[in-house]
Image (tube, rainbow, N blue to C red; front, side, top):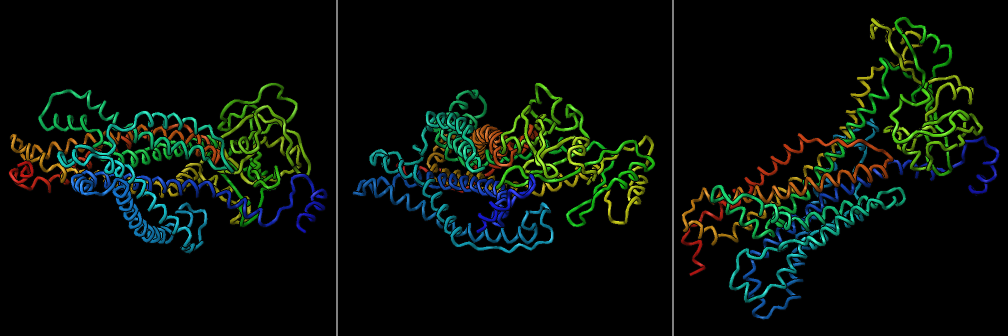
Length: 621
């Protein structure tokens, strides 16, 4: 059996050589992309959550518009449970219809993305491959079920509000006097926000940041629950002066904060998602740029030994490279892989000239303490620290050249290139311990006044044509950042979808509210307000409501961005990064969203204001 053969053969092999089944290798390869796939799926789920809030807005305002109708049905004998069930069924039908359209549209978009971007979403890792669109019936049924669940979840609170209202009171008042959500649930919202902080300490489950996902969900739910109370409190602080439309808009938001949660819940969710992803991506990109600058300090880089050629820089070639005119210094680098544990992916081993304090590396955290002169130093990446639990100052054994050698962990460095971990040791120590004198790359510093193009041509001439490749650090950074931007292009698309859904929620909310408030508009016309003033009032209502959602979304998005940076990315990919908030783009985004919400409110109210004032109030006669 394979197990018996492995048990018999493993003792005969040198250190660092392990026997594995093909299935184990396939699992390791799949695990490399699992975290990315799971995070991308959950990012899409956030867009689904935003759609759930859109269903909530539509159902809530539908309940408001039909409040008198429901009260009449209750008065002639319809019980609460039946009405509640009917409204939940409405939400399920909406979710099912949206799910069917979404599945078809999703397959079409997937086909377009695969055709134009490829299986790696344009990052360039799988150049030349032609992935085929795969239809999975089980997955489609799951997506349809999620759509129905989003519809039911969005309709649950409005259905409960409609079932509990007093028929006599509803028949008397009608209108939009009791929007679902009331003054929110500040107590429950605060508890959820506190629980999100506790969820960040949950350890990863099979390498997945479950606690981070729970924290993001709690942050969104808690923010929506406390939004009406926060909106009422902020509006209460606004000055009681200015134009009549502004004072009417502010008074309405203060008196009916449920309006804010209905109109702005989708805005808050979409803005939180967009802000969180913008902060995370900006922080990641800025950290990668700084990382590249620190790891690429030389003027030229020479490499060979790619997967296609398998070449190396032997000692003779290294001597010819060092002797090229115009070069002041050359640092050679040796790349390899080591197996630290059975069932684990190989860890990259990099040998290059290093100073004792590792100032050439992007070191994070503390360095080794105590006796540092007994064993050679090894610098470990954050992935090695997380996966294997190694710490600075710890003595470890590495399989090197068929035997185990003892090294001391000098510190932890940041590595964005190797998700499975990387080890770095000084080139002189590596050569002394292994006897390997080969190299794969060379970092070249030019002498003052030397022409880079001439030196590059001389370097290429030291070996056979096509053997050596020369690159400038600026080119390497540009290519790396271009790959980075293409990799995250799909996140920008999902952000745009979430924002469009949020704006659609604002437009739908104000359209339904405008219909329900026809009598109010007629009364204001009788009191002397013009259509233009009412339109200006609606614009300011839309701006205030969306402003509350944008403010809450930016605050929640900043918190979610921190969770993505400190929890999700660290537990998924073992990468840390420095916080970088794109203030300019977020400010422009928030301003544009508020302006579009105000425009949507005005356009939605135009239809309701077309009636003559006398007909708008005729129901009061």
